[in-house]
Amino acid sequence: MKKVLIPTKLNAVARETLNAHGGYEVVQDDSQELSTLASQHPDTYALFVRSEKVTPEIIDAMPMLKVVIRAGAGYNTIDTKYARSKGIDVMNTPGANANAVAEEVIALMLADARHIVLADASTRVGKWEKKNFMGKEITGKTVGIVGFGAIGQLVAKRLFGFDAKVLAYDPFLSDERARDLGAVPAELGEIFEQCDYISLHMPENDDTRGVINKSLFARMKNGATLINCARAGIINEDDLRELKADKGLRFLNDVYAKDAEGDKSVSDIADIMLPHLGASTNEANFNAAQRSATQLIGYDDKGIASYVVNRDVPEGLDRAYSELAFALAHTCRGIAGGNKQMKLIETSFYGDLAKFSGWLLVQIVAALSDDFDRTQGYDAALEYLKEMGVEYFNRETDTSKGYGDSITVDVTTSVDAATFKRISVRGTVAEGNMMISRINDFDKLYFEPVGTAVLFIYQDRPGVVGRIGNALAEAGININDMRNPHDPSGKNSLALLRISGKVDCEVVEKIAEQIEALHASCVSY
Image 1 (cartoon, rainbow, N blue to C red):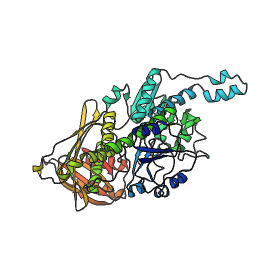
Image 2 (tube, rainbow, N blue to C red):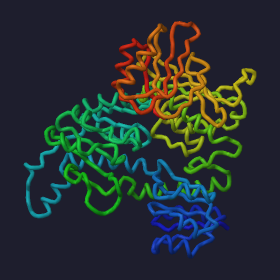
Image 3 (cartoon, rainbow, N blue to C red):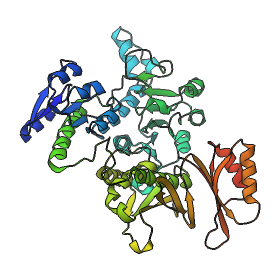
Image 4 (cartoon, rainbow, N blue to C red):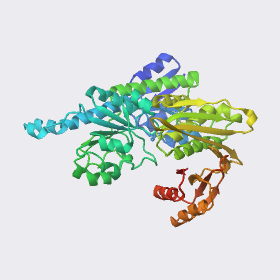
């Protein structure tokens, strides 16, 4: 039998499910430190954790360990890279706490609207301050949801009982899917301008860190409420601090830079603060525990590894092609404008890459959406696309074309209700280096997608490349590499330049105006 160690307060359904299976010996003990339990059970095969830190020392103490399952979504407390080096798969259980977080958002809205926290404290000491606690109703209000994945969609569903108008923003979400769920698709700025309540449900990464800043706070309605049950880093706290009082904004918060005791940086601006309670419900604990057990059984009995978050590149696949798939999709996203709503993803995997299409799709979806982790599996990618209302089609390839081992990624985005834009990028790997060979009708590029690139499409005429170079030089930017082909008609040209550093959007827009560009974009790899 395989030993499963559960050193945490996890619902008993995990133990019961594994015991019923008959193939596991379960040890559950939350009374001792994980390090102690690890040394006592060196024959542990699978480890279930919640917020416990799984360090190299813990891993080394259990030489038979093969699987670590995080009963929840976040796995930053687990050294996934070290686990991978030891041949250990790490899984999480995304979505198990989605409803708990959604209900927490509603609870915060109601508690603030009716002064529940302050009124309780006042009444307990014998006061009767009804006049001071005049509240407001959520019914009929306009609520914006920024990030319309599993949690955001459940928030919307809960709000419909209040007859609220729900506006949804998610760069990966199709308009049709938003409307199917009863929400009105909107741009980020529109949400901050029009909504009485704004609930954040977006990941924190290099693209989203600090994105909720002064430019958006300034557009908020006076007296509007901002709720953050997502990640602390997506908000620029100093910008909120600067504008909060003047606009009479309310701020309800459950997330911090570090989950630990001590002073919190938002204590002076948060009207309600909770100690990251989003997933802290009996039901969420049950769901995470049940998911952990069933995922382990599926992993062992059927080889299902959809939620392994530290997967290595499959045997037989050059890692460079994994990075190529990500880079090609990232290029499509950059050309589309970064946050255009996706309608359709089409792929072609040529040569020996066809057998790795599932793995490569994961990389493509992760490049197109900040909300999807590239360490997840093919089934998770398909589920995510379905959830967001994005169609996917993998084309059969024609080997007679002689493309060798190459990948084509086509992305169709929605420009408006009646207009769609299609971007097609093909690439391969040559001498270990990624190469973009085609962008739409511009072929034989052989451009390496690294660093920062700017792209301009314009009506062909002399002197344009020189003007682009001069404008970049004025901005202190050097050109490291350049491609300048014509399209088949000979009327339009592409200037694709790899440059020495990041460039402000204003510079790209200024150049586009000077050369009367048909298209201009910037992509940072």
